[in-house]
Image (cartoon, rainbow, N blue to C red; front, top):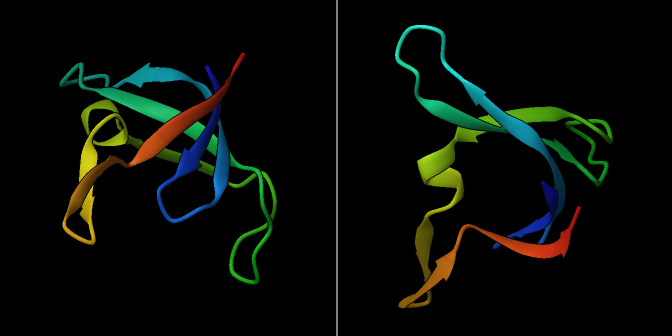
Length: 72
């Protein structure tokens, strides 16, 4: 749990980890800490845990997709 920053800059609060009822795959449940024209503040999102914790390539450099900025 805690506050994370997406590599593109927006902030999110992780609410917990949920499991898929059939596959048992873990998903991170998180909410937006920003408002946009498309989505209101507090919009809930889920993403496979492996993807949430994974890395992406930005300008030829590997960075974490989400970076922990404040522990809960």
